[in-house]
Image (cartoon, rainbow, N blue to C red; front, top):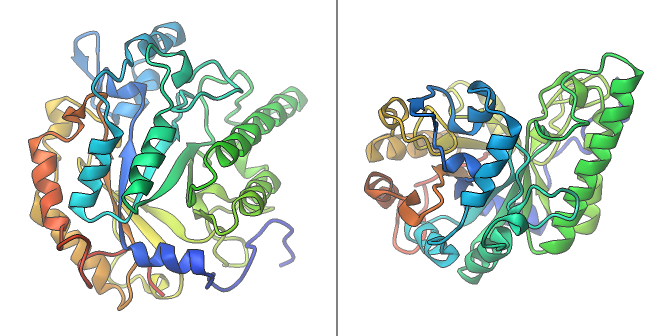
Length: 355
């Protein structure tokens, strides 16, 4: 089938940057934003759903949600300590949420007023994290949500010409933010996209193609996940001809490939596994805390990933961030211990993709 916006290649990348990404094998995925403050609880009631979806699930008025930025003080945030934790657990790369679905940005973006620059500290969280992690030899990747509940031009579906015009404006906004991230942080090694499942995005596969092209032109060697992409017909991750879009498959979310999934032997992939099964962002409620994985569960899952092939690539441990360095409370610190193997993971101890 002839596709204009399908996979950019039929075979996996073999350049040095991709080889480095494969070699990382285990990473740290930090999910952090305003939702870390209420932490799944609103007006004294725990909401039994992922903490980062709280504003939608609890139907919180936009003005009240945005007011949380005044309490996002970062009084005890220390990027150096976070990076030291990554070193201790043996992580070779880190992915940080630059903007989640609520639209709040962890950098001072010129394209919105809902960002770190307008919080009490005014600090550039991304800049501090990039500097701290890279100083320790850990590559940094950026998570970016295409979905944006706050933006007036976001559309879930495109029902008429007005929707199409509004969403075109939104896509221009998102492109400008991504260009801004590439310009401000040129050492970033990868982009991890999310929030691309709605019909509005699937109807604009050309835009996902252009985003990938733009990033790779501005940041030679940058690695992009499959979740960004949609083809001419709206197929996601894998195009309508069966070829992987992006550089690695990122469809394994809070689950691992099945032992009989032979596709993992033919393409690069990544499995993102949250420490609490119930939420990506930090949730303080007993409902979420009861799903915290035991350290040996994590070891077992890492061994499972590694068993799927002889080379192995990464599997990021997903850490729900709090505003304070209590973000790694004792149970989480103990959990990360078994991932250590001297200064770094030893052969066979971790996993990501496989070919």
